Length: 388
Image 1 (cartoon, helix red, strand yellow):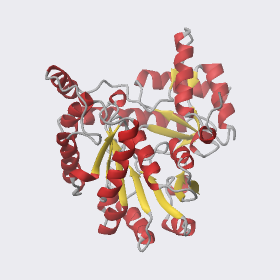
Image 2 (cartoon, helix red, strand yellow):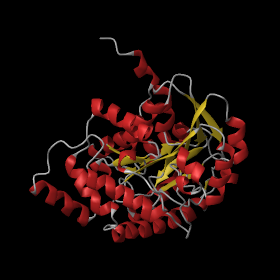
Image 3 (cartoon, rainbow, N blue to C red):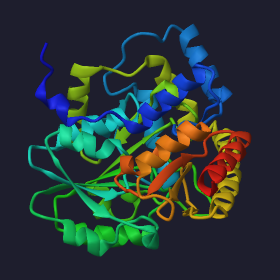
Image 4 (spheres, rainbow, N blue to C red):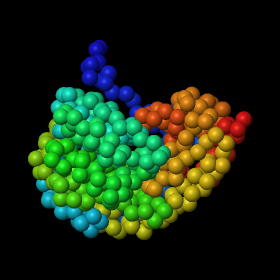
């Protein structure tokens, strides 16, 4: 049978592919250390699991409203108000099957054929794929370590055309861990003033911040930025709820939320009802001690990994401000990140993700969302591979 032409626009997720390969090799008995998945190694907090069990025992197992139940949407509204002093209404919140689903709905609801979407590079692998699938054209703005992998206001101004529909921002960033400061976001906002450009602000890693840095929500920096920003977030990373599939968007425009809900109603309908009830205590701050415990442990791992990788000849890495990834510069050793990762896996059993997947050659991504023991062993293997 003939597969639809539009499927040829999509590439498989390289991060998921490498993780699957690493798991397959491990199942075959091979000594594999995988640093490819963006998934915390911690268990979901007990308060979340208890809320899920309670919901099951109370029979809350039926269909819900497509965009989510009112108590969970209200918990999202309360969280955004408490954390960032942002005000949203119930009809501006849509809960989806993870932030990736939220992004898919957003791209489908916003992008028409030929619309341009500005994406800072390096970027999360899914961004350009969703833009292309939706009929849009990704416009990449290259960054480097000199700007901590962040775009400048001038770069943004130079990239805008009459066809620009969206600017995608990811702070803290996957794969670099960079965070946009309030001042940087204000400068970006000044460039966008007077335009109809929508900002999609992916803030999935907002709770995982290091070095005493402060996170600033994009929508919070000015009234103009609030009105043009759609915030994407979820509980997968900071609350170790990857498998629960909980993502959401907060829109100042209820028309956009309604369009997303209409699409979701014809695709998946509501997300798992139990997950919605389980999410409430996490959103209301009852898992904050667990989140802080994980954040502190991630920072210890980050500090060790940054120090030891920077001691390896011909390798270096930027010390990230957030998330749980290192974006390692391998240019002095190789400018072929695919070959580097393939050889590393074959010779040492260490799985990393090539920078090519994120739109930047000469780098590889290492996730430190795994045990310190594995990190120590893995970096030793990388050191032996590079120095050999």
